[in-house]
Amino acid sequence: MALKERFLKIYSNLPLGLREEIIIVLDKKPLTWNAAYIEVVNNTKISDEILKKLEKMGII
Image 1 (tube, rainbow, N blue to C red):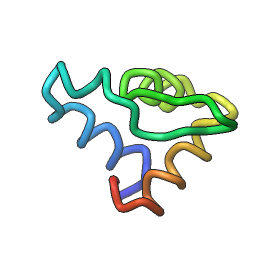
Image 2 (image 1 turned 60 degrees about the vertical axis):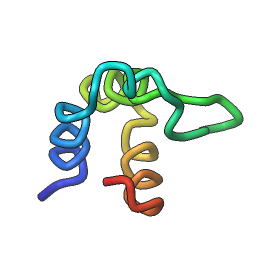
Image 3 (image 1 turned 90 degrees about the vertical axis):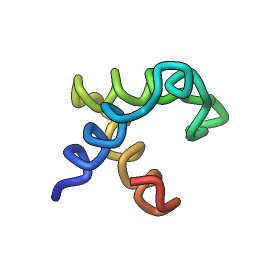
Image 4 (image 1 turned 45 degrees about the vertical axis):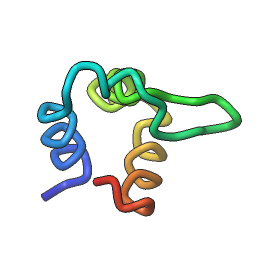
């Protein structure tokens, strides 16, 4: 399963309250699940970096 698919599957199963929690910090900027979701869905420049870091941390 591709990283994006794994992220979306995990995100869809998260409780709504948990989606507001910070999961990753990129360039000294914290990102919540919701912010990461927006980046990943829109295939932004940092979406690949987000997915790779989340995989490295064992989150996805």
